[in-house]
Length: 93
Image (tube, rainbow, N blue to C red; front, side, top):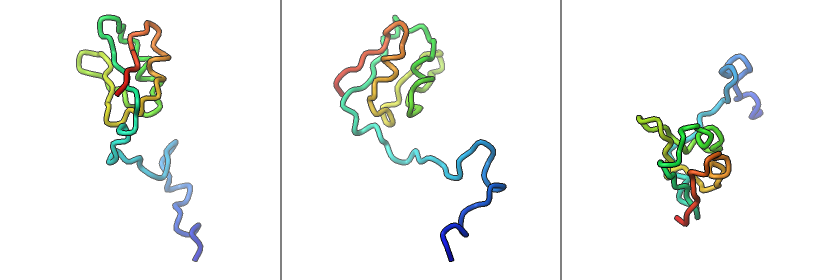
């Protein structure tokens, strides 16, 4: 029996989906060296940081401001780079 026989058919895969679910069990933010810190006085709530974060580690608070989820943030700095008003500073973790 080949491993291909155990794979789902194309009809069983969700539309525009992947046949697996990403795990949030592992807190991947532990390996970061730098972390994003948001200056909320400068933040305009444009959500560029949230949009460009490759790990989905920028959450939206109830007041509409973004907030890094340090459990999953890997400290790549893309959020700080994309922030048009430079409200995000990468600081040593």
